[in-house]
Image 1 (spheres, rainbow, N blue to C red):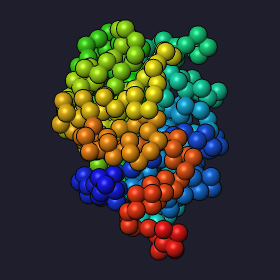
Image 2: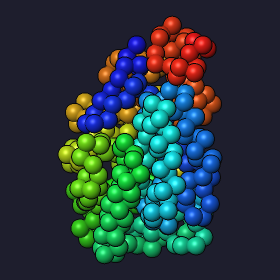
Image 3: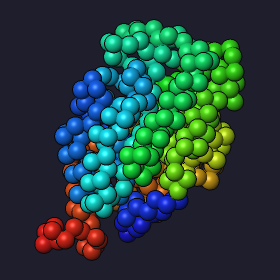
Amino acid sequence: MRAFEAYQVKGLRLKNRIVMPPMCMYSADSSGKANDFHDIHYTSRAMGGVGLIIVEAAGIIANGRISENDLGLWNNEQRDALVPIVKKVHMIGSKIAIQLAHSGRKHIGESEMPVAPSAIAFDENSRVPIELSVEQIAEVVNNFRLAAIRADEAGFDAVEIHCAHGYLLHQFLSPLSNQREDDYGGSLMNRVRILKEVLSSVREVFSEDKPILLRISATDYIEGGLDCEDLIQVVNQIKEYVDIVHVSSAGLLTVPMDVYPGYQLSYSQKIKQACNIDTIAVGLITNIEMVEEIISNNRADLVALGRELLRNPYFVYSAARNKNLDIDYPEQYRRAF
């Protein structure tokens, strides 16, 4: 089965095509440091055979976290707390990335104010964010750069830049949340400017043989917002810095959505083909038959299972056993298969 075939991009070689996507656990304290929960959570998925584990969103600055219980990567103490997790995942035989993020106007912490491209609140229950100045935008770009350096130093095999789900870089992309009149607003070329600067700066400092992933929302699901054709243009503008696009959708506003297993697959396939770039598909994918169909029909190169891997950390081994496949089980577990 192709789901169990190896995959390689740059110096990253995965033993299978199954990915654990970043999912916020809201389990850190205000320090933003990983703890025993994160250690158990991520290493258990490595023990379960997942090819690539992407650690949940790590804020590049304090008010870049969604909440004050999210991970951070804006200081060396946070970096050092992640090192043991990376080492254990590698020892077990999986690869590990981390998602670098800035929540923008969706920051709900009480100690600092949220910021955004424009002073427009997420909804009626949210605070109105402070509009970033051009100088502050440069600081955001530099914070992504510094976080990428720390991720590299911690030993991560890849980084994922979060430009989806209504967080800061997505806010800059969408005309519904970006009403600036300077070089960072207006045309799509201007709205993609900060993303291009972030990716360029990360590429300058992150090890050349390690890939950079980009998480995107392929549509805002609302008139006047971004659609998949817009995101194809965006990806084509920045793909010289990116190796894999992780294709999700929505999050900018609360909107009605028709959600069903594989509801985002068409976006992954369109972006993969139109931009000639590898993609990760994600979205209520729950069984190995769906994974196999996605990869075999060239809808994506990798497939992420979020909730299913929360329910079953040993999904990979269970699926292989059910298909009578002799994959690379840990020697200590082989008696079970």
